[in-house]
Image 1 (tube, rainbow, N blue to C red):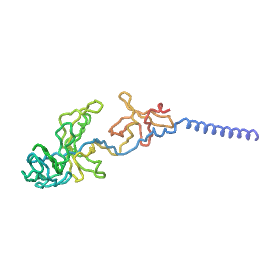
Image 2: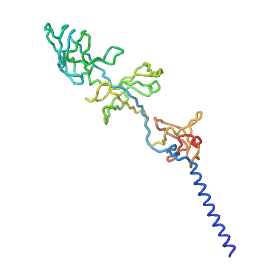
Image 3: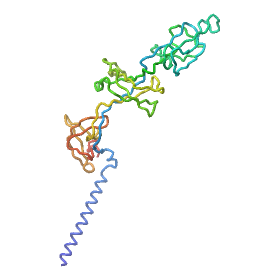
Image 4: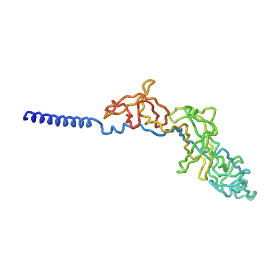
Length: 307
């Protein structure tokens, strides 16, 4: 009986020692793992995947007319100011001909709106100028070809985009899009692609590089009086979509030659290298097929490089 008791005691002692050694080893392994390792691991999950193309553009009017004075002379009085909506025939300003404002040789005559629209500043035809001076009472007009104001048809507002040659064939005429404006927060406007230019333009960067871009015009389904020509716009086109697919952050996908892999985490730095077959990709996510399943935790960098 004593031998059996001693034998059992040794077994218990060895079991306790083994448990302590295992716990110490586990704790030691955890100490070797960097504290921010979780930042480099992302889950694969089921969900919807949308492929959107998002580009910045500028709000423009496709129909605007310049208003000119009847001759040389002076602006005597401004009746309607820049930023106001006018109707055809509304008096915009009073104009007086002659070489001197004080002269009684000419009587003031009205300059009227030739169409409905929004009054804006004239667009200068001088390549080095960004715009003409504001029209004010007392301003001298040297020639009858000098624009004194511009009337923009707000019913023909559109958004101009510059699309790279990489993305141009993803778009098609008539494709619906959504448009948002930084200056009009909380509102989204529907539109469609009306024009896709058949020839490319050259877009130069400040660093001397040049790229080929195509002009795309977006027609808006509705406009708002909050809109102003020149506003920055963001256009989003939904190119493709899939529902309930297995997806993961795109940075978890690695390529070697013609094959694609992911690194599935087991514990710490331990991993399984699995071949996968990517499908639809957005800017942030990719559809995956293969041995990966929902809930798997995937490295966003090669595990060996994180040690």
